[in-house]
Image (tube, rainbow, N blue to C red; front, side, top):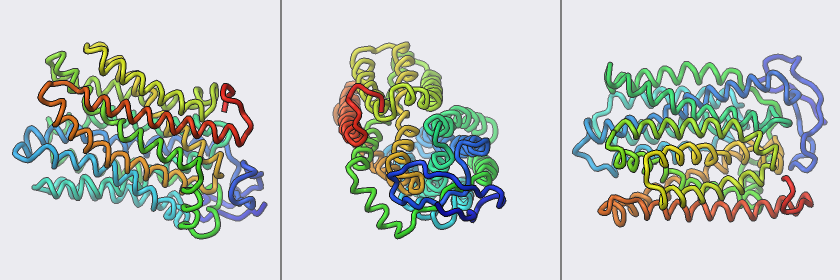
Length: 438
């Protein structure tokens, strides 16, 4: 095995010889710069948590801005035009993952993520000077989403490179930052808007994101040399593998239905309770659930196996939407549903990263994770407008959410079917029976 000095290694003493984690990885001559599973590896995981907390927290706080735009600032504009801001944030963040893999291979995790914090900061500051919805679409939508893409996928990938024994746990801790950030930044944004101003809330948020994310990015460094050869050829090789196709279709279906509970359950709770505060409380419970679920993803995966975890969690998502959205119409029921759904619906983020690193090799994890995130973006771009049309056509006049709930059930059922095929493919490769851990 070759040993070189990483371009973004902190010092030359980090260079060591170690065995390749995965014998069947695409490049058997894997070049490693440091041992995995060290104390520094956990420092990387904490840095990723902070990075994702600020990035995802900023994105998740858009619900506060959307309410302000709809009810106060742009009350005469259509809700559809304003909703495109949040749709494009998520779409650009996920689809940008296709390009972040190549950027990481060329410039390293540190420079790529730091650049993302700069872009996000500029986007939010520019958004504070806008006076039209289309200007917000360009700044708070597209530009912020592209900046976030430079942070999101690399932050997940770098953790996967540094951990082998506890990869799912470490990745789960990192992505739990999204839930923590969602709780903290949503409340902070609301307070700043109420006590200072909407424009200064964007500027403060941008500077805070740059300070925390920029500093956290400095901790990142590459542990394994990128795979040799053309990035385009590598993406094509991964994309045509049946195991990756199953993961890609699964995450696309998940994101086509995932936002239905997140967007419509708070509205249902307000209708039932008659209190606007119920909506923000439901969102807080959901974010708390996602935080707990992401941290527990390592334990669950260790108990039943990564492939089984994905299969079981998506089946339960499908089941919970059926039970709570069609059968239980109480505020207490919506709180319970938000906690349960939040806990299990995002397990796939950490688990998929482990599966991709294990099946394709840690040296291509940045490209494989980025490509899978692009499929998430396709799901968001398709799912959110379809749910809007279903609501306007079938649900709005009856003050019910049966059509959008049925859409979510169908999406999670399709994702479950994809993970079932993945479970069969991986089980066949490793000669593991259906009821065994894998």
